[in-house]
Image (cartoon, rainbow, N blue to C red; front, side, top):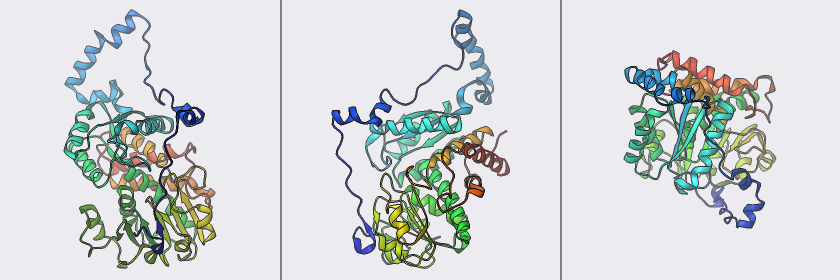
Length: 408
């Protein structure tokens, strides 16, 4: 898409300057983060000589020997059955971009906190000082024996696609890039309910997506898989179509399965008359672009911290259902609705991978949680709804068994 206002999209504002020490002292976010957000605690007593002899030498040797003879016992006698590695290289952090591994650590700690709070899963933040794909894959693969799953986080596109694919081919535990698949699961769930609310099916909808990064590609692929009517996606250079010569492999592959209407003009032109606008970019979308959409339009403006279009503006310009990535507006598209339950379900049956069928099952289960509460300001459950993670986990576990990737 163009970065000029004539195409309906404007560049995002520059980030605010870094805080001074005085400002940090007054900021509650810094106070909360002081000393970090997660810790390791003992799950067994260690108060007597007998405790020590069982938890460490000599008792631990008997457990090690048993695992050496039967590796599956690691799931019973170590943390492997309920522990995930949250791994990043810091190249695509939230709305901050390539800030490096050290600066990404607060986000990874936060992700570990969410795993525990919402899924009962222990998670370890791992920030790697390496960006080469070969080295990244090799490093993560060497860390993998200690974990029951790998959650990839904030790795820039298109590298993230290859990293995930190669790791999943190499490892026999779930590898899940949450920026792609977590977002896709939640968006599809919300879109199912938004369609239901407006008296349509997925097949009735024409969708335009702003942003062709990891989330944009993954969301687009998933909703196409779910049966959306038609979909076109725009990157920073315009609409993605097969006549373009500057597409990477992922975008070219996607162009082959999308944009049946053949949009080759501006982003704003593609949006005109569409039913759904999905914002997964760092730009802003002009009010007149929203106004040009079909009646009962659906707008998911998911950029953080600033949505591509303010919800009030979207509603004022004809949008019936509006969602954002923020917690201070209704219909928050938050990955925490997906990843705790996905890993909980996958690890409960010791799945070897997370399949497309498992992701679709997760999305369907998440949408169903809304039930009778369905309304324009409630097409997706609250992140604090205690039904969410169990529902997603049960659906994922059942799908894993049905698709033959479960080991128990």
